[in-house]
Amino acid sequence: MELRVLRYFLTVAREGSITKAANFLHVTQPTLSRQLKDLEEDLGKKLFIRRSHSIALTNEGILLKKRAEEIIYMTDKLKTEFSSMKETVSGDVYIGGGETDAIRHIARIVKELQISYPNVRYHLYSGNEEDVTDRLDRGMLYFGILIEPADLSKYNHLKIPAKDLWGVVMRKDSPLGEKATIQAEDLFSLPLICSRQVMNQTYSKNEFADWFGENLDKLNVVTTYNLAYNASILVEEGIGYAITLDKIVNTSEESNLCFKPLEPRLESGLNLVWKKHQVFSAASDLFLHAIQAKFSS
Image 1 (tube, rainbow, N blue to C red):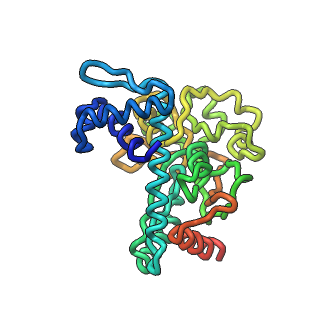
Image 2 (cartoon, rainbow, N blue to C red; image 1 turned 120 degrees about the vertical axis):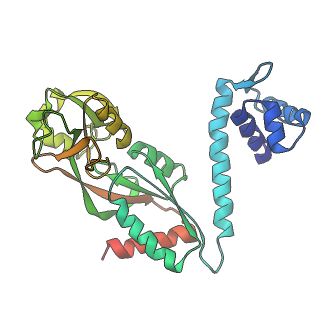
Image 3 (spheres, rainbow, N blue to C red; image 1 turned 45 degrees about the vertical axis):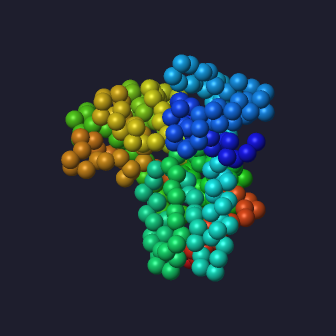
């Protein structure tokens, strides 16, 4: 199985047509059709459902598309890493994390590094803990920013000198809009929109579950989310009240939403994590040393 053929396959899957893909790739249609047929024979599976003017992926084709994207991504990433092994440090740093204002700490270090190492590029991926750790484990990210509670047992980690404040995002015209803070009893009768991560009770330490205590089961959770922007839209549409972190949803004067902190105050720490025994590129190693120097001081 050649990388060139996998790229052909992905182009056909994206275009939904062998004719369009052949034009895009600047190859003849018979040549492309033959490559796809050879790929199917090589794998022993039918990858496409062929129609008169288009094609669709079979279940096996969908699986190959996912794996091919990962293979091509890792191949391109590896080429970039080797091309950056020069006296002048260059290359790419891949960082994943949830929505948090603490990304400012990372941004300030990146800004400092850009002065001396302008050829280093940074790629940010947004997702919850499950998304980020999955990409870390598969080598698609070098670093992850995990909001507590989080399972750190598999990773090296460094505490980020910041904490995120938990509270409730609601419409300004809601019954709770005049309150300065929100207590647990205020929430029991309300439709709630909660992060899937904080509702996970399998962590050995979950400050969110501890805050509600035995009353956690009384919550009327109507929707869960992994990124707060989508949760804020649900709040705007009157679906419920979102329990989320401060400073990641627009609650400015122009917005019809507001943020009210929980009382007693509930904060979550953050950690920068990376795989144990990870072999870093020159650019990623530079970033890690800068982070360690800044956060450990």
